[in-house]
Length: 135
Image (cartoon, rainbow, N blue to C red):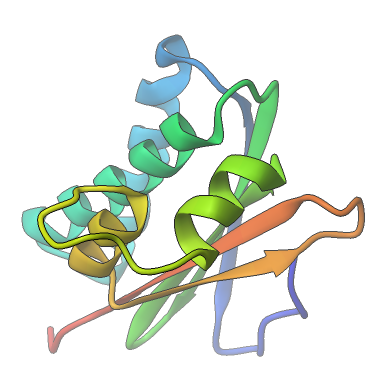
């Protein structure tokens, strides 16, 4: 999904089917990541909301890979591959109208930064980054 992390970055990866029956699995992994980094409940909730909303917007996907890069000051999450059309329109199109609560606005609110990368197969991988406050 991205270049190999540096030695001071830990990498956790999960590949899972998409569906409501699998949400507890990625929530468990996110909880472990949050605990490892000392994130509070609000930061964990923000990450969960970002991933859940991203997967909901992705539409009919069979599976997805979540890759978490854990550093002392941030967690970077890569979600993909995702179908290009709905994600590209939501994240790379014009800014949402005032008051519109689309995917882009949600991500702008709950993560510190996000971006879209193209995978080898022409599908998209979304990068979410959440900064970790002092512990």
